[in-house]
Length: 195
Image (cartoon, rainbow, N blue to C red; front, side, top):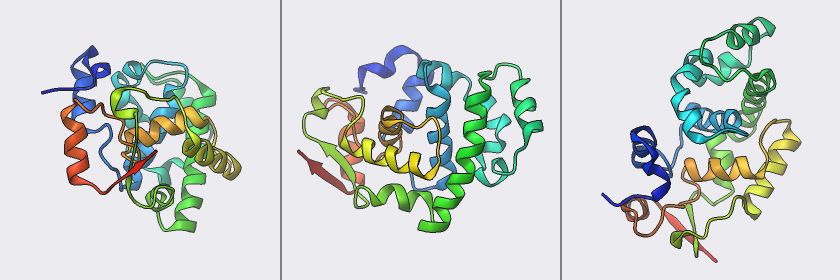
């Protein structure tokens, strides 16, 4: 199988690339998980986050944002004391805060997925040049979404983090043209070509 070179670090990254990265996500719990993994990743490698993913799932009730929204200082301490977790109180508190904002967005738009996919007209965006590896760390779309999420009160979600989420959740297809996932995703999901 032909793959994007970044995923060849280890089996965990390869599996993530082949089965998840860039596949459109419409489920809100999965959206929240992906988004909060990006929050936890800030300043760390993606490999580190993937290796700790099951710990995060355990600490954060499977990323059930309704449960997380009711967390208190006791939960923050419980998570901080969990073996193997990334011990950043600010990030843990940001996940709890973001769960509450996530609920508000869901109330306003029907679901977070509807909110997020509304930015792309419900289609996966394929930016010209990206398929050849000319990938930005952020773009105009991620700037706008990050600004909107910040205005709503979300934390640890700047434009670079939001761009990574758009890639992961399939709003943007940034697989290389030679990668087997590139063509598969275009064939399976509505795609909009963007200059």
